[in-house]
Amino acid sequence: MVGSKVPLGDSHNFGRRVTLRGERVAKPRTVFWEWLVLSHDSPLRQLLAEETARDGLGREFFGFLPSLKFYRWRDRPSGEVQRAVLKPLGRASRDDKQELSRVVGRSLAFWSWLGVADLHWENLILGRDARGRIIFGPLDVEMMLADLGLPTETKLVPDADPEYAQVCRHAAGVRRVLPYLGKPVAAEQLLAMAGAYRQTLAFLERHSTAIGKTLAELPELRTAPLRVLLRGTDEYVQARLEPVWPPLLEAEQEQLARGDIPYFFRLYGKRGIHYYADEKLERLGRLPLKGDVPQLDPMLDVARGLRSPSRAKLRSEGLLTLLGAFDDASLDGQQQSNELTLTFGPRSLVVAFPDGERLHSRRNLRAFVSSVYLPCACGEVRSVFVPAVTRCEAAASTV
Image 1 (cartoon, rainbow, N blue to C red):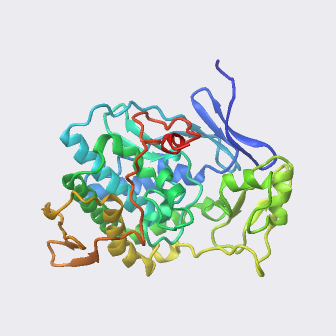
Image 2: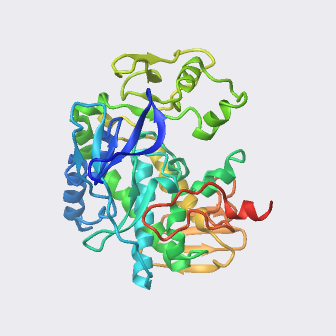
Image 3: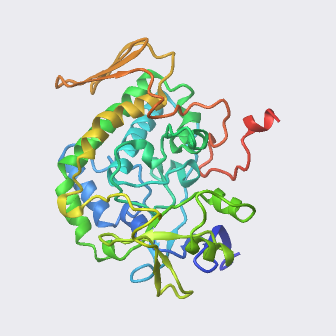
């Protein structure tokens, strides 16, 4: 029914929820960061199209990003976004698999370099647009400009943290592509991913000064909240039933008591973790800057062209992390493409590039990244959106 509102997601900030209103999604928070990367009209997207064309990569190099329209968001703490409309990919030919593999490599590089997090599989859409392009991108962008050293920090590929390894593996965003690329991914596709990852990082580094300047000129850069996740939603749900560790902060207790999932954020260039302290979202509270409280990680500096010492790690160790996430015992010997050569030994992995650069690593990278291959298929669906999944079928079968 036109005009009807369908609530989506959790309640935040005095009962506010994302709602579906016909062909638009109303979000009761800033949509600036989404507009920056998901709107074809944003100055960042325009810059990327111009520079990829100038570099001979083609204006559609970043064409895998959704191109959505945004409404009623300027000078507001909220906004509306066009609802994404895509067709499922359908049966994948060899060329389709190569194209999708390159999209995965570009995605891992782009989101890691921009410092975007929370790209779990429920937050990603995958399909073809009206022009037939493969679209693979997020629905929500609330965290950006984090100084990331590995693609695992985006949640596209799973972190190896033993405490959260299984959760991270199930939630990994790139699992969306496995129904099309197969399990395990073939060497030909892995070469395409790795080559696209390296190529994309090289492009972003070449144009980092222009990208930083474009961001610095936007007035919303320093006023749009960047979400800070102190805990997962599941922990807050648990906290309503029993104590959690570390103990809830007073600001968390206050938000839970009114029926909200606690919402915290930072502001670019300013100290502190903030939260809204009144229903009109005009007064801000702030967690203490010192003591036994969460502390903020460093952010990328737009004035320095988003340069950081961690960029070298992202280029080398980040590439090995990508390979480790998709590695499988069936990959053996030397595999070669125009962009690089991979040599899979029993215990070693060597990456060689045409310019003579070589990366050496032990084959077992489980200390840094977990495998994307799981015995279950939850999340590995062929629909554009991931349907609600409440329980893993593999776990259910063991009960």
